[in-house]
Length: 363
Image (cartoon, rainbow, N blue to C red; front, side, top):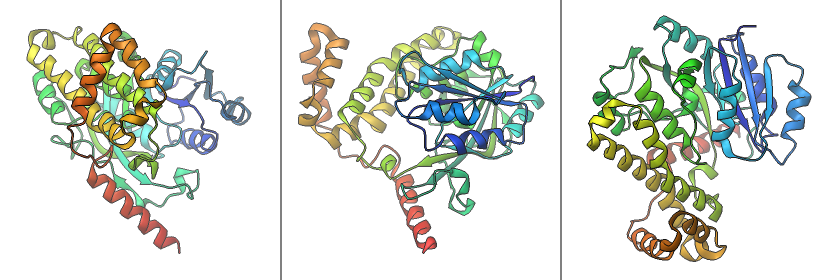
């Protein structure tokens, strides 16, 4: 079969969601679609379940990493193996509306084999008592993803090829980096060596930045196709650990070098060093506000230092200057006012309200 779309799905500790997630993708109205499942050395029974249910399905590739490397590297493996003309990404606990890829693919073809199609989606507030199958949630409980701002699409349109205009709007949080809401032309990714960097957090931010500024044809769609699962843990600090803090700081320390690789390919940034600096500042601010500060304030310095993970990271990054950099890091982070969450307070309030409504309706 000549596949039109390959959907790449990293798999790790996913045994609850495998069956509904992959069936949901196989049941898309677009039948020339394959699912590329990349097992990132999941320690549970995910691989066995996936092989038992879908191992004989010609539309499902099941790949296994040699070691656990995180979702970014799993997606890189999927990009190399994809047989489709276009690539999409989905997380295994999320969902996609049944007509999504047929409509996104058609939109790409209508716009001259567009490099990127950028759509949007809905948040589904769920908790541990909810069914694993996200497709069973009634549409009346969907909440629009609030991420795109400043240049929100109300109709299908193609972005200007003026990269300064793209930069100014991106800097104001237009064109968000949700991976699941986008369709990428496979050859565009391969020709430009667009891949996920060596970080395990916000790797999608750098990837989508690269696609935005290298795409010749970047199409915006207002349609809400992707179904993003958000749980109680996602909107609180209860799930924060010292390991997650290390991951957050590793991304903070390394994202600039990853994005610099992209900007070296683009004349606009070579000619506009202030814009290059603006990219660094914006990405660092996002990582600080979304991850580092909330985790720091939730755990506290004593807990952060308790198991040596953060100290180990600082020594890896700064060698003989590690002690001074740790001192400077803590001095800086003591000054920040309390933060409420890793997502906006509006989203937190809306999600909590919708969870309460669902509970009330179920009684």
